[in-house]
Length: 201
Image (tube, rainbow, N blue to C red; front, side, top):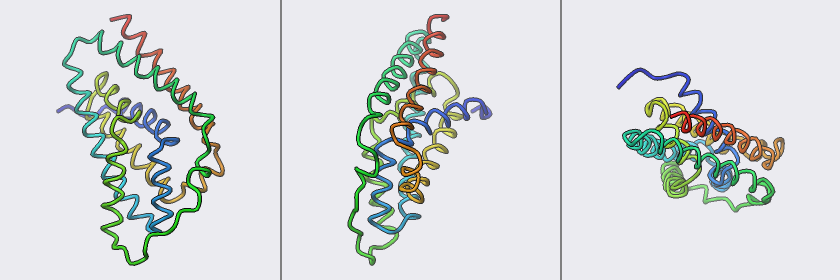
């Protein structure tokens, strides 16, 4: 195992952060935090689930790295392009506040660990096949898998914290559609980079 590549960490953090911020998992974290009134328990559960998913994604990317480079790079470029299109098209979907609504609270006697475990299970299942998981796998196939894991996990834990602790306030300040369009532009840039690399061989 080599040393961590700071550039790969930064790339993974940036790409995953902008993709996860307007994602359904972020909204689920806001809802669960509002229902449980236990934001730290929600954050802990989501962080464990998301970190586990980044382990899986980075490992999958490491396996892809064993395949011929040019086809893998072409697939990565296509995945980024699909992500850019999906993010841009989803920019006009209902805003987070409309989706979140006024959720009923969980019983105040619900143990901290049960809230955390419930959130962990929900988020872990919801994250399968998600855009951020595919992003991390794609980046791990192109760069250092350990560095991608570090950056992607940090991004996911950060977004989960934002959702659990200040999600509603964020959605009132920054329109969700704008966040998705910014993410789409970032993914478009990654598409160009990956496509150019694939063509160059």
